[in-house]
Structure formats: C-alpha cells, structure tokens
Length: 376
Image (cartoon, rainbow, N blue to C red; front, side, top):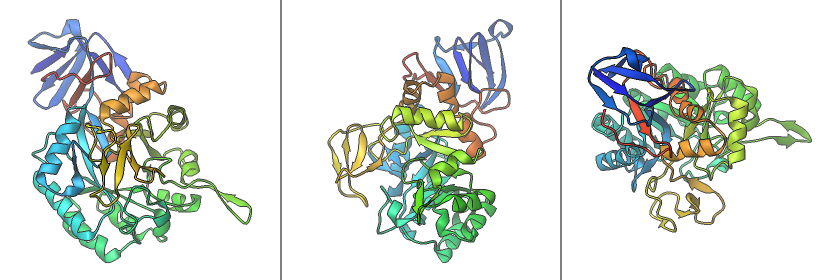
C-alpha cells in the first residue's frame, strides 16, 4: 500500500483538497479524507495530482515520428511526451503507403510494452481521405478506399490498430466503417469534405468522433443556392458526437477553442497535440525538408513551406492544459478533456479518473501548470 497525501486532486471535472489517495500496486484502492488514513505517505507537496494525461492524436516528438517505424523513434518520442505529463498515448501514423503502415504496426507490436508511455494501440490517420482536404498529409499518398489493402491490414494487425480515420464520403455504403468497427477499431472522420448526410450515415453506424475540428473539416457549402451542412455544423448538431481540439494556441484561436467547449461540453471535447517530430523541442525557424510533407517551425507551430496552412503542432500535454486555462477553462475542466473524455472515447474503462478501482496512473503539476516529477 502507498498513500499519496497533501495534493490537490483533480478528477471528474472537480478539484478536491483534504483527501488522500490509497494505492495498492497499480490500482487505486480508495480516496479518503486525510485524517482517516494512516500509514506511510508520499508527500505531493501541495501540487495538483490528476489522472495520467491521455494523448489520442500524436505523430511524434523529440526529433522522431512514429511513422519512422523504428524502436528508437517510438521510444524517444514517448520519452519526450512522458516528460511533459502524458501517461497514455496512441501513436499516430500519417497517410502513407501500405509497406510503411506494416512496418509501423509491426514495430508498435514489438516495442509497445517497453516504452515510457502506455500504448494501448495505434491510430491510423488515413490514407482514405479527400484529396482537396489533405492538408498536412501527403497528397500523392491520399487515396480512395482500397478493400484489399485494408482487409490485409485488419487480418494481420487488428490487435494493434486502435483507431482509423477516414473520409466518410469515400465510404458510401459504410462497408469500411463496418469492417473496422467489427474488429473493435474506433472510426473517426478526418480530412474530409463530407456533408451532413455523409456524417449522419456514418454516425448511425458507429463513427462518433471528428478529428481535429476546424482543421481539414468541411463547413457549409451551396448547391445551386441551397446550403448544405458540413462536418463542422454536423459536429454541433449531433449532441453525442465527440470532437478533437488541437489546443496548442495556434490551430484554434482561444475564442474558437472556448466556443467549441461551450457548445460541445467538456464531456465531448478531447484536447490533442497533433504533434510532429519537433514536438517538445520547438526549434523555431528550422525547416524539415526530408519528409513527405516539408514544413518549417514558425510562430510556435509547424507550417507548410509556402505558409498556406499548418502542417501540425509542436505542442505537448502541458501546453494543452495551459492553453485551455487561458481560454477560460477551470483547471478541473481542462484536465477532464485530457483524461476522462479521451478515456471514454477510446473505451479505457480503468483510466481517466482518480477513484477506487481505477489505474494508479497520475500526472502531477504545480500552480504554474508545469509538470512536477514526483516518484509514486
């Protein structure tokens, strides 16, 4: 038994003081008033203690990306994000060719239990997207749904793939959606020109997540004068639809982030980094040309070389926390969108809360919202 004391517990959208956390091995046994708990205690020194931050959309960090498909890339990227408060991560593989997907999935299978972060599975972002919405994805790689290709991946790697993003307008009969969800893989809408009918059709068959809302997501269009809703409006219209928000302070202005949270609620918004290989190290002004989509780090974000759009972020979990608070969220609400809500999206039933029966997985931070390294 270990007793964590003198901390401000942040869980379930609330902040609680005067309580201790009792853990046994890797599980929380109880959360009780301090004066009722006896035994050897670990002093949290008045810092906040939250459930371990869960990152459901991250391409890399520390100079590495998961698509590099090497054990070193997985381990170094995980180490970088672990230092910034992430405890659970779903490594994201950008749209790429079949062989690269296989190498990344095989590497994940081999190393996922030896990284600094818990890796429940891999997030495939593509490649079945709308070309006009490829954004930071390689346009030469984005393609229509290939049944033979995805069935081969499902046959061999369905135990490793946790989530697969696609454009629902490319899947008119929901065949791809049904095939992946039957394997227990979460479906999400991304890099898409879908209209409301497409989103609703997919939603009714289990696609309940919008990837990085406002980034490569369609909005209202007009057809011979008649308006049709896009993904953005569909996300608000469908109450139970979850959305991702890149809370790096660049992709979404603070007012827009505030609006998303106000309209969707903290139980439907997942804060993500969408970090590329410079995640956690910055390198302002550095150009990355030896990659499928070259980019430059400028103004605290990764931009395409022509500056026409963002390519991804360089954020870490602590940046998400600080950005959400700057946008007007309480610390407790910000933490909820980084723990309880992503846990619900990904079906992690023992993570995301500090309560009896949940995993003893924590992130500790101070009044300045900086990560504190306390060995538990």
